[in-house]
Structures are given as structure tokens and as C-alpha cells.
Length: 142
Image 1 (cartoon, rainbow, N blue to C red):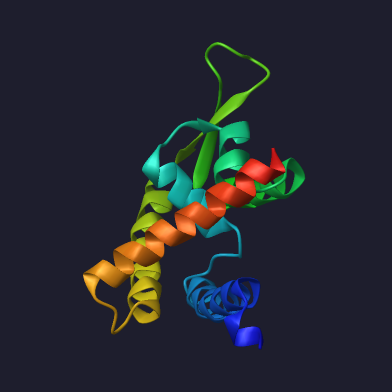
Image 2: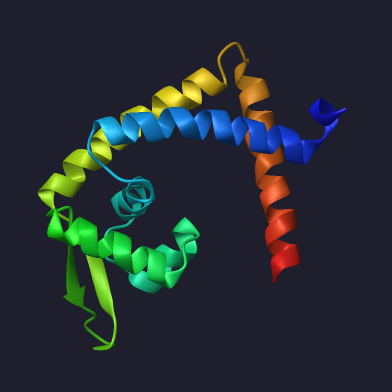
């Protein structure tokens, strides 16, 4: 039965959660993919494009297009890397920081909905289990 298969449960949970998040993100005027970059930079501003790609699991061409649109909208700014002139670092603008706060609230609501009715122990166990699944898959990909 599909409800007993991990891949199906993960996909189903992702699809339901992602649909709600995408709707909320569109309501605040962002495109899919942009919130991941904003969250990444809110956690550590001034990352390189390569670091953002790795953290957000984006390919370079997708990330470049997203960053170009975000820069045009005034959400991020780029500066040439101080030690590697071929590279640049990306920073959130004031507007980008405002969106980071709004995104955090949307993600908090999504997490709360997904884990509604679960004890703190169950929530911790779920997170630990998912981290283990991710580590297994990432190790296999290397």
C-alpha cells in the first residue's frame, strides 16, 4: 500500500505543504525559489552565488535568473568578492530583509500546520528522522 512507502509519504507531505507555501508566497509578491534565497541570506548575508546554490539546492542557471529578478526588484544587491574578482557576494537590501520577516512567518505557519497535534518529542523525532534520511541520500549522491 502506498501509504506505507516512505517515498510516497515524503512526496505527499511535500506537495501539500509546498502548495500552501507557494500560494502564500505569491500573495506577498514573490516567485517560487526566491524565498529560499532570501532565507539563506537572512541566515548568513553576503554568501557567494556558489554557496547559495549549494545551500538552496539550485543549479547555477536557475539561481542566476532568480538573483537577476531579485536584484531588479531591489531585494538583493551584489558586490564583487574582495579576494576573488571573478566572484560576487550577495546581500539582502532593506526590502529583502522585510521579506525575510514575512517569509519566516509563512514558514512558521506551515510548520505549525504540518505538526499540529504532535508532541514536542514527536516533532523532534520527526526532524531527526528526516535529517537522517537526507544524510543517507546526500551520501549516496556523492
